[in-house]
Length: 479
Image 1 (cartoon, rainbow, N blue to C red):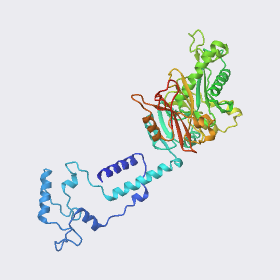
Image 2 (image 1 turned 60 degrees about the vertical axis):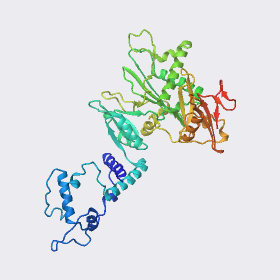
Image 3 (image 1 turned 120 degrees about the horizontal axis):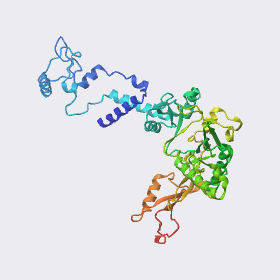
Image 4 (image 1 turned 90 degrees about the horizontal axis):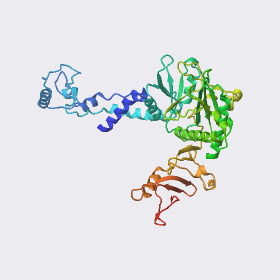
């Protein structure tokens, strides 16, 4: 009981720490019967007139009580003092008052356990109904905000700068609640950023910038259009995705001194697995542009001078540093602290003719705002067999897993890499696919729901039981 009670007390303190109120039913605790309370505590009530125990009281030998009181007093190095009419005839021993010197935890009253039990139920109900709650919690550090977001479903982490000092802080809220407050905020106080959390699916995004003074011959719109043509060509080549300009949200905060734009490409029913995969894909784009520049001088338009000391343009206007873990990315309608350049939509691509309302534009510009029908994740990572080669593939998301034998020709619905929907089965297959010191790993899997059949393709260990040796080139499968 004591261990469970300590767990419940810890839960209670966490509840109060997070500012969650106990349920009303827990506050209205019924008072225990006075007679039963006295019996439970072993208290003897003596009638003033007769000096005899009252009915229902527990009689204790006087000599034994006196001895216990004396021992208690000696144990704590104090004299026993008679309490006249203290607590209506109750006497409290030093052990009860000060607690056991041996550190034995006091017994938890049943009323407290009942309170903690009801608080636990209330917390579970709050977690289940979090989608309808208006959450707006601020934190001084990013890890605190991310931990809070993990404990509350459907939450996202944002960052903002203090208007006067520029100090960065973090907040957690839903997209809807954030927009409700953000839209009514004075524009001069909007210095907000989206935190692109590690491991979360994201849309493809670009941060494009260069100094206009050092590159007066460059034309921003022309450069962006050329970059987009390369991106759409790579999407089709690597993922068989036919691109569309209507997928692109373009935001601009350029000044007379600096060209600055954000591009967000929202592929219907798809997204990158996280921003590290998006960053690897952008690296492929940059490498492709550098290679094409040697054969086609037109691609040289995408290169800029970093400063006036540079003899020739040698640096791409694509910022490749924005794909690090838990990166902050400025939000639409925001400016940097101390700056006046606000990030606004251009009248091109998805925002052409400004047919979108402001809220739709804002939601479409969020990097990690996934649509409910997102069905596949784009993968771009180092190949297992050759670290110098990028591996392009797709995975199904947890939003939709519709597999059947009629979809064999549709590669992304039947052939996926990474974890399957059955992690216990994955662990078992990897354990039996290990021979000697070489541990087999799952390379990809097929799931045939109609027949309840799972087929794994293994990597790292190519031992085949049918031929009794390692395959020299092809992989092995497990069913």
